[in-house]
Image (cartoon, rainbow, N blue to C red; front, side, top):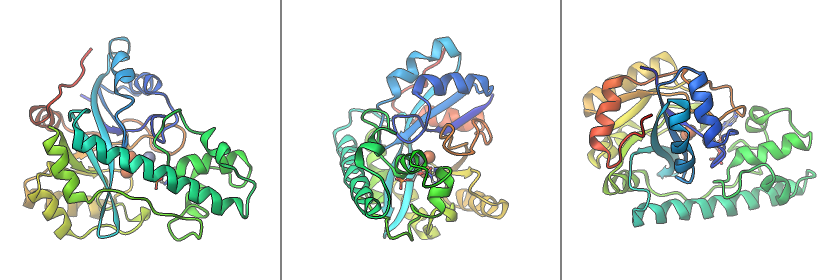
Length: 280
Ligand code: AMP
Ligand code: ZN
Ligand code: FE
Ligand code: FE
């Protein structure tokens, strides 16, 4: 069984539609893929329709933007009720804040570069959760940088004068909310330090006390040492471990299935989650 539990579509900052993602998952030899767009479940239905044709099972999820004392935390939520009032309100708040943040960044960038808000909107799927990758794509289209990675390393980095923050819920609160919504919360790339500061073990402990189910250990942004430390931490806290690609289509080098999750862990997620995996 080849199981990849972290992938993005054009509903957030991936470059494939949910249907294309399912086709690509089949081509990559996956048996199960999770669609985990940032702060949105809007791609679930389209992806589910592609299950019979692709013969790839779909785990419905989302990657929730959170903060812990000013440090960015990404929380994967699996198989939760997409209509839970508390959770949908938080996700909507984050999407609105991301929208204002992207506009603020474009205003700053427009002082120095030939870039407009329409250029950024043109790069995103309609209703997509907006992020820096869309601004990066507009900068690529304008010939300012060669690709997304170059943009993230310079103009769009957190240390850049064009960087603007956005509102996101507290990570411990978000863990509780995901459980309330019947979902299974997993801490995404907890040690990915290339993206900025990472949280201390004490924060992971607090998240575990609030109902965290697992840690995403096998991820290309983690070194072997970090994976070893995370495996030990997961063992100490009684959490399961996952591995996934964090696929973003052509926007990032991550390939579907480059890291995978054990079948037993998928079974645990399905036992704990309110929804079922959509099977062919
Ligand atoms: P944001 O959520 O708007 O702050 O942007 C962060 C998103 O950009 C994350 O989902 C990352 O996966 C994505 N990202 C980060 N670094 C890169 C990169 N070098 N190339 C493409 N996408 C990236
Ligand atoms: Zn992303
Ligand atoms: Fe992430
Ligand atoms: Fe992601």
